[in-house]
Length: 237
Image (tube, rainbow, N blue to C red; front, side, top):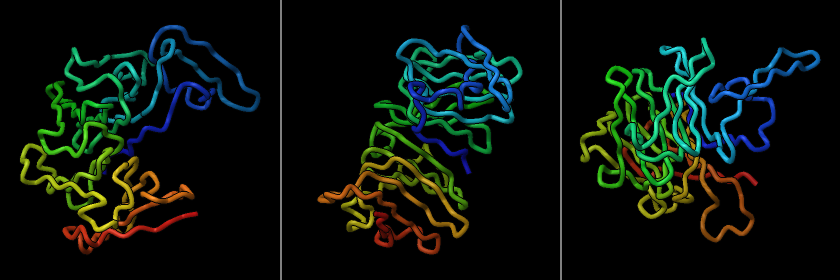
């Protein structure tokens, strides 16, 4: 499975809890906290947000998704090895999500640019957007299922790519409120996760006509993965 990727973190209000991970630009400060380890704190620039983090064990680095691009930080030096923007092939500088696949590819979900996939061997980017089969250009999360299928959370439903064949548009499916008969409670999908039973959990906005703003999750059972009508939702008040 890919490392979990999700748009969860912002520099503003983050405090020191994740500061030691962000070796992004010069301007660090060392803080000694009573009863804790020393923490290295780094600034990422004025009005710049950090929205995603992913550890790349093979490369000995951490990937940082910001509102001005994707950065690879060496864990040995805590300095930026590379900064990726549209100039370097990234689909969009505003990054929502980052994950590292078992094969070493780095997935980057962007704001309006779709999904960018970094090939660690060639150090090149391949971008996927609506013409390639994406449900939407806004990508918030992604994962690889046990059977090799890829699932992508977008602002217009959940993409499923059978067998991970991203360059074969015939392998792409899109699950929405409409084609699941309401089993998917909302097309605005923010998070994906699989559990030990092989179910796919889908975190969404509240469904239409839900005045109580409940947190809603949908389940996709492993035993019937090809039947979108088997989506069902559970409400947590």
